[in-house]
Length: 523
Image (cartoon, rainbow, N blue to C red; front, side, top):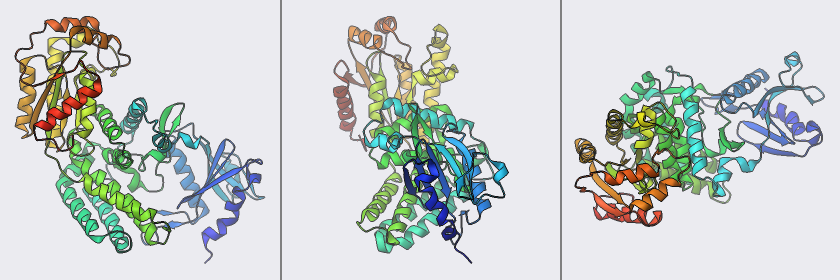
């Protein structure tokens, strides 16, 4: 029987030539399932005529019709997030020549089929943006919003997912890693990871099935890492979603998110990983689901370790880089499973003391990876009022009843996260003694350590700070800041911090205060 990929070789060589693209120079990238040709303002993607993997294939592109269906599926799944990038499917016709997009009249004559995309600068890939140090707070926020919006609109697919599906992924990945381990990595850490994943899966088994029934298994991206997200008109746009395997694409939304969080952590961008998580969570309030996140994070890293180790074992590692990569992902996977006693850190103080900035700076270093869950009263208030975080509220948003509901909701979210094994940083004024007592009691009810930090700053400093705010979730202005000076806060028993200093010094002081209690794990 003829080798389908050899039969396809002539088409690939032609697509690599300028003549196939009106004389434009061609840049070619080969992956394990595609050959990508970039020329001018277009990208042409040819599905390789492969069956992968051979034993139990998750894709089979060995026929022209299968490749056409795969091209059509790629267009469909990616137009959900990147409609401007994915132009359509085109035939490769005798000659050879490239037919027009959506040329259905060419069905019988087509030698093959390709995906046609709009080309973008490779520097717009988020992995390149991250390497350049340009993944700033605004981009991180936009990234979290894009993923949350995509997941919110994704189709619910309860026929997939659940504990058994995750169990199959764990078993397959660890079996492959164990086969490669003797030649690439030490078998001891591999076995330790296998044991850790098995224990985490057992712990989450019932919850995974409950989440499937509750609608958290959806038609997701499936391969959501920085290299599959690009900037289009300054906005992060996920692309290159999985089209060839329903099992890989129809997954728990937190498992989809976990790839992005793990990728950020692997690149040393822990603050960004924590920020993405905390900007994502309020959209659905999925705090109880956090119990699954260590398993999902570790599994994402384990799969990357498996891929690198398999390639190294196959002889693709002349310089040892793949073995080093496999070891790095293996270490990261094990680290994601390391527990940390949950703690609740409450940051209080009047408007303008810098609570939100300080709380956000503390969160990545508190508790297990990727850091503490940050619960901000300003964001909770806007959610309760069905408003966007940066919308301004009038007096109706600050009644006694609304404020009571805000603090109750914060406590409920904190409890859900604590019981899921995650630490919490609660950011609110906490002006009243009963508000401070309530959040302390909630930590005690969960068996979590509690630490309260109270930020102090002079009235004029606070007023100046709130006057300079732009695009922030807080509604406090100078008048509010000055009015708060008349609050009767009662006796504040929390650790008092001088917040009139520059933010970096205040963060350092808060970290020292937490460390002095002898309970910090990662601060």
